[in-house]
Length: 187
Image (tube, rainbow, N blue to C red; front, side, top):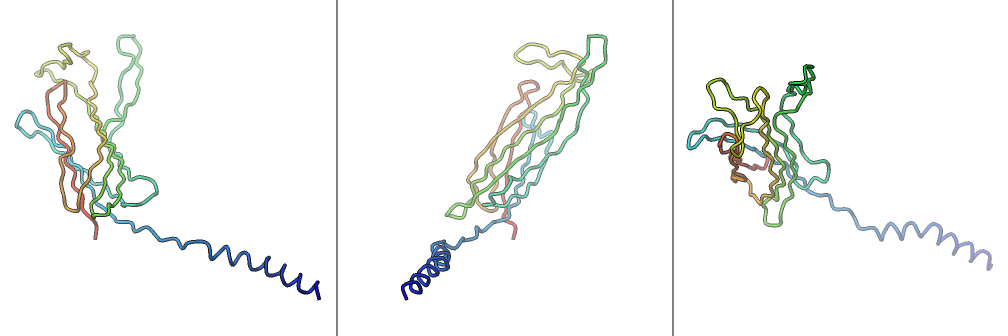
C-alpha cells in the first residue's frame, strides 16, 4: 500500500510540475506595431534663394524591436588618389544620402522618432566660379571636394506634423541646408 501511495505521489510530482510551471507563465501581450511614413526633405538655400530640394520617404514601424529602417541612395564616384605622383590610382567613394530610423509610440499618442541622416555631395568649382576656400585657405584645385552633412535627431512628433529638425551652413560655399521631417501614420 505504501508503494502505491508513493508511486501516485511521485507520478503527481512528475506529471503535475509542468502544469504548475505553465500556470506561472504570464501570457505574452503582443506589441502593437504602428506603420509610419516619414518624409525627410533637404532644402538648400543661397541666401534667400531656394536652389534645391531633395525629398526622401522612409517607412518605419513604430515599436518594432527588429532592425531599424534604412535607406541608401547614391553613387560610387571614382577619385584619383594618385594625382601628382605620375601614376593613376582610383579609389571609389560613396556619395549620396543615407538614413536610418526608429520610432516608439508614447503614452499620449505622439512618436519618439530617432533619425540619423547623412548626405554627401561633390563640389568642383567650374571655370567661372571662385575656388573653394575653407577658413580663408584655398582647397586643392583639380580634385573634387566632398561636402558632408550628418545629423542625429530625436524628435517628439505627432501624426501629420512637420518639424524643421536641422539648419546648417556649408563652410565652403555659404549655402544653408534645412531639414524638414514630416510623420504620418499609415492607415
